[in-house]
Image (cartoon, rainbow, N blue to C red; front, side, top):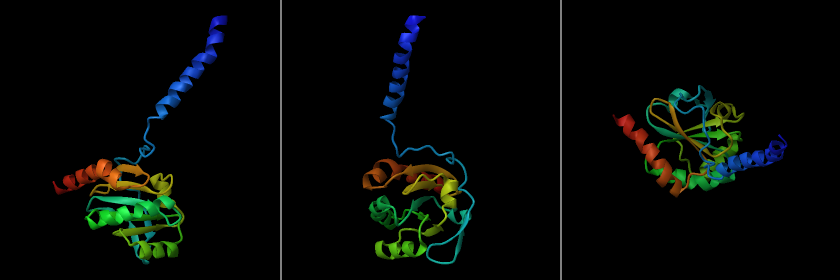
Length: 178
């Protein structure tokens, strides 16, 4: 019994060490989402550029990326040129301007160009909360029926798009064409 008491701290240490070691190999951009395979959450919010009201039904019809962004987000500034390039290649991108000032968002889009087909203003973060957003940027892959199929957390750069995300988007496009 005394031997077991002496080994207990070592066993606890080894268990914690294995748990932490496993964490070293996890991809932080692969945060799980309970929404994968579920419809995009219901919402009714104004567009960034106008008084038009946008709902989840406006996201249906074609596969798209729904990119959560903000003017206060430094990483979003790094990602934005890539989104402009993707939009120029025909990728359907919708924006969710998250917890931001609408005038600042409009200026950002004038200054850095607007890659978004629709741009949803979410000043209180209610849609972000429903999506389980941790922060910006985050991007959701939505199929033509409005079902969330994948979530990517972090900056989309050329390498990430080419190696990880373009095949996922192409799969959605191919499924929609069937």
